[in-house]
Structure formats: structure tokens, C-alpha cells
Amino acid sequence: MTINVNKPYLPDIKKYQKYLEIIWKNHHLTNFGPLSRMLEEKLCEYLGISNLLFVSNGTIALQIAYKLAGLKKNDEVITTPFSFVATTGTLLWEGFNPIFCDIDSKNFCIDTNKILPLLTPKTKAILPVHVFGNACEVEILQTIAKNHNLKIIYDGAHAFGVNYKNKSIFEYGDLATLSLHATKIFHTVEGGLIIAKDPAMIDEARKIINFGLSDSFPQTLGINAKNSEFHAAMGLCLLEDLDFILQERQRIWEYYYEHLKNDFVFQNLHQYSTNNYHYFPILFQKESTLLESLSKLGDENIFPRRYFYPSLNTLNFNPSKSSCTISEDISKRILCLPMYVGLSQKIQDKIIEILKKSI
Image 1 (cartoon, rainbow, N blue to C red):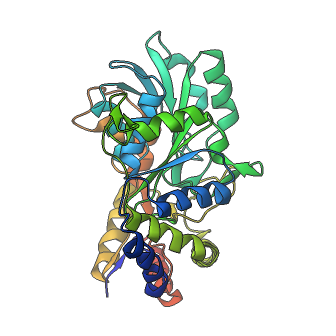
Image 2 (tube, rainbow, N blue to C red):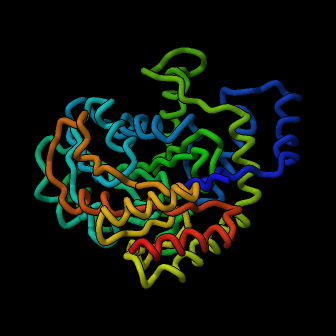
């Protein structure tokens, strides 16, 4: 049996079939169908927000968010080097210049103390990431943005369901995006969300993802980023199971922590942020020890993942070769352990035993 870092959650197939029967009955397969609308309404209610849009994936959600924020080619966007490649890749794809701000060595999020020296007249936005679902310093970022007339777009790919000071983390920033990829806590197989404070932005985004059409006529430059009723059906099924999913992930997370807390360094979780138990990252003292552990785990068909490696400022297709020493160091020493519903305590014990023997 192979144990990967993630195993997508699948609901009872009978639940999914009930939604398929609705699709077969009305023949509405895509283009803002009733299940997609229902999913958007239920997600607003669950997350405690007012405005969101269901799109085809989290990457295109970022690209559309940039357009909604009014970014133009060659604008500078301050962002983190410690994230999945899509964070940087989307900026480069759209012709923006990512300016990398190093991360805090404790919480792994963008270091707000290092942003101001990076500001130039070309700086138009900040793109922070709630790393592993851990909230950024949202209030400090809000102050910086207000004082310097910048937009804030949060990459919240990992932050589904996270609250900050008893309200949704997505209440902060001008825009936020989520990934609903199969590897996420809540998924629609493939999918993404755009969240905005201003409902007019969501109205505009709804046109953009449908070729720019309004009343069947092109009103703005658009693209096809709609999602299907089949994907929405999966999301509706998972919403019904979310309490169970989160309970299981919490159990697995806490078991790891209890047995590894004296052996590894962990990400500092924000005191005002809730934990959604999305990932379980551990920090080794040396990269060589991490590689040794990876090898020994691989011998047992156990495959954790080096999230996030390498540090994005070092990518060969990134024209900016700025130094971010903390991100570069942590990215070499961090490992995310298998975390998914159904992971047995027996497998966890084997992982823990191998890790302890390697250090």
C-alpha cells in the first residue's frame, strides 16, 4: 500500500448520485447551473461571507483577481517566496513583476516588517499567502495597504474555513482566492473561489469567466473559467460531510503533534487564527536529515512532500533573483507529513518511528 501526502476525500457515492439525478433531469451541465448557484450560496453561509464566485480552478481565480484589482502589465506586486508555484507563476504569466519579501522564521508567512523598504512608485498590490492555513498579520498588512494606496489580494488556497478574531479570514483584503483542488480539505475535484468585499467585483468577475458576455453580448474582455454542475455536485456532497472531515483531520494532526512535539520545530500558529488542520509541516535541523528521512519513508512506500521547495525567488524562469535567506533556508528543511481522512494510527506510528530514528 502506498501512503501519499494526501488522499482526496470522496463522499458516499449514493450522495453524489442524488445530485447527478438532478443534472440528468434538467440537462443543465455548466454555465451557472442551479447546483453551482446553490454551492455558492451554501459556501457564503458556511464561510460567513457575502460575495464569492465559483470558478474552474484556484490559479485562474488569482489571475482574474488581479484584473479585478486593476493591475497593469509591469506593475510590481509584493509577495512571498514561500508558497506553491502558482502564486508566483500567475503574476509572471500576467506580465507583473513579483517583488519577493522574505518570510517570518516562526509563522512562515510574509514578514510585514520587511515590506516598506520594498515599496516603489511601481508597487500596486501585495499578494500574501495564509501559509498552511495560518493567518498572515492581516491588520498590519491592512494598515500598510491603506497608507500606501495598495490593493491586497490574499492567496488563501489553504485557508478554507479559517477564522481570525471570530470572523472569516476572508473578511480581510480587497480580494481573496481559494483552491478547491482535490488535495484540499474542501474540494470540487477541480475548482476555485474568488471572494471580494465589493459585490460589483463579483458581478464583473461573473462576466469575465463567461467570455466577457452580458445578456449574450461581449461587454468586456473575458475568458472561459466557469465550472460545471458535476464539480458543484461534489462540493455540495463534501459540505454535508465537513464536520466529519475536520474532526478526523484534527485527530490525526493532534496525534502527530503529541508524538513529535519534542523532536521537531513547528510553525507558530497565529494566536487569533483558528487551525483548519490542512497540513502537518515539520522543520528539520538540517536538509541532510530531511533527505535521509525521505529515503527511509520511501522504502516503506510512504511519501510525504517537500512543501514548499524550492523557495520561489530562486526559480530559473523568475527574472528577479533577489535573496530571501529565511525562505530559502526553511524551504530546504520543511516536510509535510501524510494528512487525510482514513489515515490509520498504525501508519502514523510507523511514520513517527521512522522520523525519530532519523534525527
